[in-house]
Image (cartoon, rainbow, N blue to C red):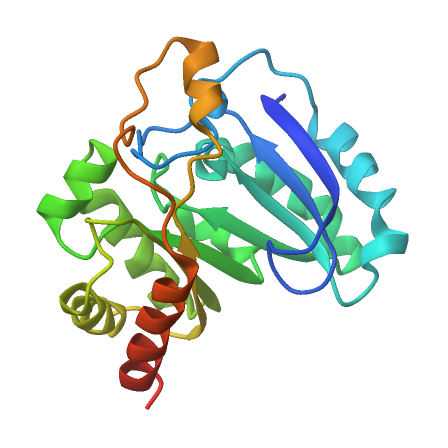
Length: 236
C-alpha cells in the first residue's frame, strides 16, 4: 500500500496544538474557488508506504514531543483513509497525537479513520447548500455525513472558516454560522482565516483560470470585527 503525498512540513505551528509534523496528501474532490493549493487537486505518483511515513514522522518527534503531533492535511486526507489508518496503528503505539485537517468530503466509511483521530480540523465552506455548491462545485451531503460520524464519536473539533469579500464578510452570514455550528458537537475552537490571493500564481502556472480574480485580499481588521461579533453570539 502506498499514498500520493505532496510534501511534509516538519515544524508546523498552525495546524493543531503544539508543534506539528504536517503531511499534505494529493487529491481532492472539491474545487473551492479560494483554494491556494490547486497543485494538490489531483493524485500523482504514490510515493510513501505507511512504514516509510511513520519513520519520517518519528524523526520529528523530538520537536513536537508530547504537546504536538502529526496533522494529516492536503488536498484531502480522507481520500487516503485506509493508508492513514495503517500509519495511525503505528503512531498510536507511541501515543502520538493525530489531527485530521479536512473538508469532510472523502470516500465514506469514516468511523475507523476517525477512531484514530484525537482532533478534527474541519474546514467549513458555507452554511447552506447553495452557497456551498457555489464555492466547492459539489453538493453538501457528504460533509453532513462526516459531521454525523464526528458527533457520534464525540470527536474534538476545531472549526476553520475562510472569510471572503462579498461572499461571507457580513453579519447575516455570521448569524447563519452560529446556527450552523449548533449541530456540530464538541467544538473547542473557531478560527477565521482571511481570504488572500497568494495562490494566484499557482493557477497561472497550471493554466487554470483563477476564480476570484476580481477580489482583493480580505481586510484583516474587518475580519477581526466579524469574529468579535460571531464570538459574542456563539460562545455566550
